[in-house]
Length: 212
Length: 212
DNA sequence: GGTTTCGCTGAACGGTAGTTCAGCGCCGGC
DNA sequence: GCCGGCGCTGAACTACCGTTCAGCGAAACC
Image (cartoon, rainbow over all chains, first blue to last red; front, side):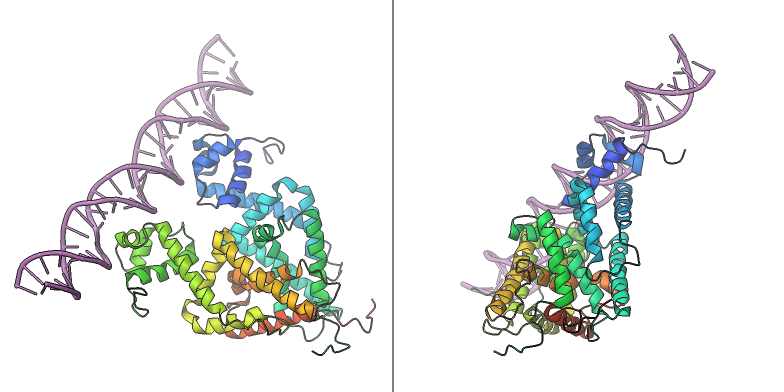
């Protein structure tokens, strides 16, 4: 009785969730009508309320689906014993993108919108990212890997900003660079730039003072 | 004949623009009805279309108003001859916030939505921020202030991420810290943390190798 | 002071949104 | 083969959205 609904059965219900995720990501919740959703999912208008009670109910189902993908992605995270310095957040992201190449763009777009709408679970995800960053800072701090003069309050936030930047602003990055920051090569390169910036900044070493 | 409409006359038209800015920022364009706008501005429903032609027209007027505020803020920017290293973007922002204390929160909220909504002028503003960051990099590079191994492609984007992070994510920062990242003290502190992180990173100087 | 002007009003309107529900067709049990 | 249950349909319904426009009232002008 439990665990019904085959995983590889793209039935109306699941099709609605997947399609809704993509359309909500693209145009926002209010920008998509139930008729759009029904047409794009190749089901009747009535099926949405039949399965989810209302359009809002569908949104919740999509949220749950998104969260499930997100939770699954996080399980790839390195264990708490690993303390490689710069960017533990990026590694699983890279791996996760590999496995969700087709859906990734919709999922990122949806995430973007969730943060915009200040939904409860958007806050949850942000808090999770923050916790990871702060945990990284704490662990590195315990090993004396962070300079004492660095602001411990802001550092984790700045790490999260750098981490989420491409997710939130990729549409604009794309306009400037001509391709997405998630493209394999750019992504890896960003990963390196990000780790290096965090660790050393861009400035010259403080040794020889290059005056004027 | 030109330059009509007194600056200190909070007439219906201007009241509509100011109120709409705040409401759009809070609930989004689609989340606000013309009736909401009329009631909150204490004018009739008809006045919106009378002045702006349509609700969309009001949005454009609000965009223009926002842009005017933004342009005005940018005039405080240090001239092109100043090349103080870390964060020229933050200084005028600080000054600007001083002069717009009451409106600031609405303006930032509106900006947040514009960026996350992918509006045309959101892209314009992003491009502007990017141009400033890139210009800063170019100028500093010319003076040899940036290490050669730093990624010149990503550096300006990462700077923009750090710059816009608090704007985009402040609602969530507020949940964690209990107050807005735009609060005077936090803002200044973030400004310092931001500049320092960019310049030197958080890592120990490469001199004495702290092995293990 | 009468008349024109013009900013402004708000009831009424058409369109479209989300929701409802009577009923259709398919599948399994008797 | 018939019947009952159930997933699903989509025309119809209601509510609310943005928009319209005939007309109001207070200044401005002669």
